[in-house]
Length: 142
Image 1: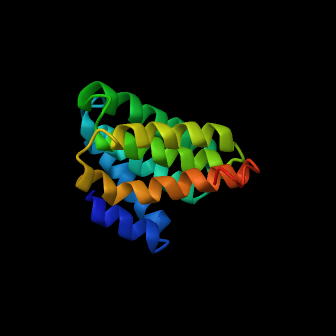
Image 2: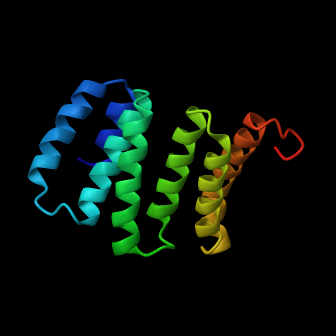
């Protein structure tokens, strides 16, 4: 399933269709220890997060993170995105301190990119950090 297809299905609220396509993709993916499988896990985690199945989302993000870290290395942008997405789910679970830690891990990875490249995403990451600080009642840090 392409990134564009899954994003469209998630954002348009076609969650059942997205879930059906994911089930087919999971069955078709023979290598359960691959970057492709990690992408499927990440997509499924996003779907579960949207549906407020936060425990399942976190479990899937963790599995995706483990695979991505092994194959892509600890400084890859996909790993940063996974940390960020985990932070969003953690914040939605009223766990802002853990969310903040995930957001900071994502930022640490992003900071290793060239300035022009990292500036494309850092604004969003810092907005997420600010939101976590607000949830913690640390308004001056936000």
